[in-house]
Length: 212
Image 1 (spheres, one colour):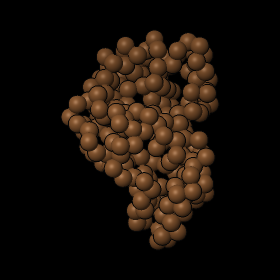
Image 2 (cartoon, one colour):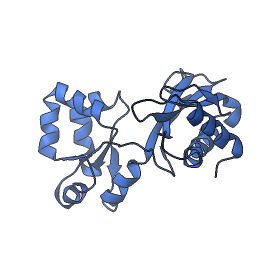
Image 3 (cartoon, helix red, strand yellow):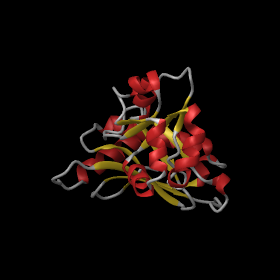
């Protein structure tokens, strides 16, 4: 459960946001300090499952064959076979479009080598190489978990952003999401909280409110 300070900041961000004619997301802006982000080992690169969900539609594509592909069709946005993977490898524009439109990829572990071969140059730089699905993994469970997952990725920038919810979610639910992100961030940074300068929460078009 998030602390009161986080929930109060979220409530202010939601209240201060002017009414818009579209459903706004709620985002977190994180500012780091005292880290050499030119060194890749210091960069933040995490997938985090939000306890209250993202409040958004998350597009997930699965690379699979046989029974796994059949089961994935019920929950994924698209399921691609080995032949379709090979076709994408021959059509760079289609591969780029797919990569840009898709939030997460999942692939049977046995297909990962071919994915690297055909799509590595497209998915790799975008940070979208698939999550490998091991033979004992449940594809339905994996897809549903990924639907509530966000990427926390700094690259070489001191300031970066991540999705934490939508404006019609409760302040409590959004705060719980933020709490999970902040805890993960603290546990993975070299000096923990000391490497975090400031954190702000805001709706898409609303003012920023300091969380920490």
